Image (cartoon, rainbow, N blue to C red; front, side, top):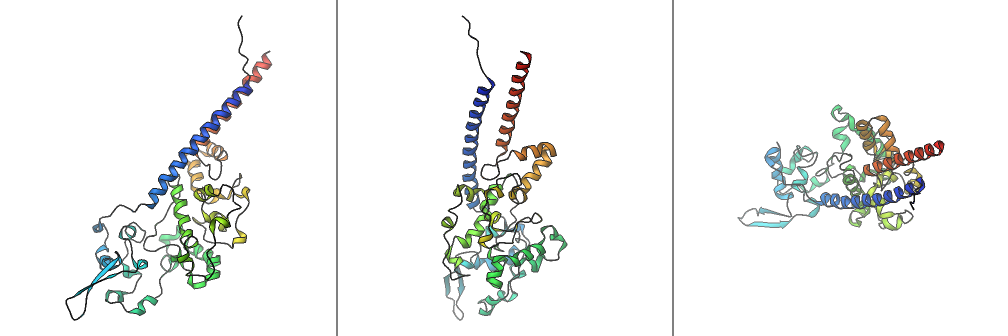
Length: 340
């Protein structure tokens, strides 16, 4: 007796869904490993650089001979005795980080007083006003694409500026000695998230810095976000500013930090077709996809993206393949029924 296999399309679809679940699990494991690698890379210091490549390195070394290490040595006036003292940790500048930063071509005295050339330094110099971003970059056509004027306007309207007035400057978040543009693209997106979130945690996760601006107790970040599902996953896949700023599509990074009662708390704000993340964190990813794959295919694949912790191009491809097979099976099934 010959038995005919009775395989219904529904069973095939079920098998495909099981395979999809397994593939999705593998993608998640792969992404988790990548996060670990990126986090480790973020913590590593840049490779030591050749100082001869920088035109002002010789002048800057006069300062970094003291401020580039944990101790400094000087000769006591009136004698040949040398004195070794510890440098205050907040005054130590990492050479490698400085020469990898956006300001690596500047002289120290481009921002600091020329009077620092005299040692010991006059105590009054520590009271000097430090230039902010807008002081150097405002009105400069060379930097027009970064819209420093709009950034300044947003910052002035932010809760940081309103609560702390002149005490809160650009340098509270961006260290002029190590700051570098952290462009967002598909290769370094997770590094960007780690880098940007660390800026916020520098104060909100470190009481020594937090107490410099307020007498309030430092809030417990984890407790304040207890309402957030999959908390750890959100912290490693989304930047703080996505929920805590009034995002505008015209800026590379939003600077209008809002009060905590105005922060985003609705899941659908991110996990929807009109996700706010497409205008901020994934802005360049979507733009690149449209450019590389064409408008129609790019929009189609963009729609299959699971916004948030599960974003993955591989997941997009798997989704499209399964969708295509499902449609094909339905058409075959319908054709066989019509034929009968």
